[in-house]
Length: 328
Image 1 (tube, rainbow, N blue to C red):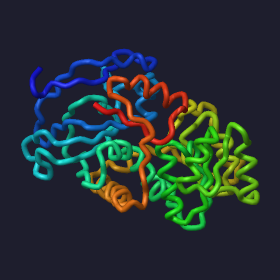
Image 2: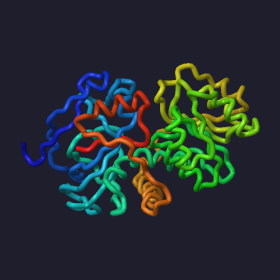
Image 3: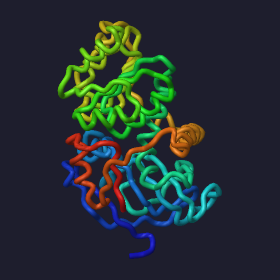
């Protein structure tokens, strides 16, 4: 192989985790405004499974999944002045990260502070920036707000719990086992409900004195959305940012009226970091909190890149806690 050849996980036809194949790839040299990276760690997210399974349409075939990674700059293309060979960097893009090397636009890269390890960075570029924009822009949480978070022991959920405590909000999480409940409690949540053992709507009503929550952050979707709406106060906000249990298929606007003039949104991170100014500002907030120790990232699973199918199976069956990272 040439020095720009690499390996990666390729999907030629949508399907189960086994649809990913370990294949040789040719990265090529970086063009104008681009940077070639040698990747050190790659984050695993539900969006990867949505593309792999065909739930989300593919922009081209074959598909290389992966939405976040960290590594070292190998070389830079013409016009790139902000980065040089040897720099530690991280990025989030919707696709293409499941590979050992990669060429990316320099404007999408973030310089990685020395205090942040590669696996931590790869676990927070998508999940951490998601937590940041959810709490500061999608619904700006303030002290005293009551907030419900589903999947509280997941990668985003654990970051949200810590961040909500810093903001002075009252936080309620849901999780699917005693172990996950304990982990969520250890990461800032005031109350955690085991949704497999309890009716989370009834417990939220009890916790809030029947007042309901100001906002619900729901990444589960099909199994939780009706309960999420019932858990809100009048004029509350339903933030649906993922669908780990499946797509919401039967939502009607009348649900918002009957719940008390509720608001609902389906945000996407990439709209909130579209400009470089937004990307760098949100990343500075996130990495500043991580570097200071104010917020800690939890890498619960580390898996070899060529075993990505194992990671997908664990994520889709909800057997994971914290983030999963692939190591090239």
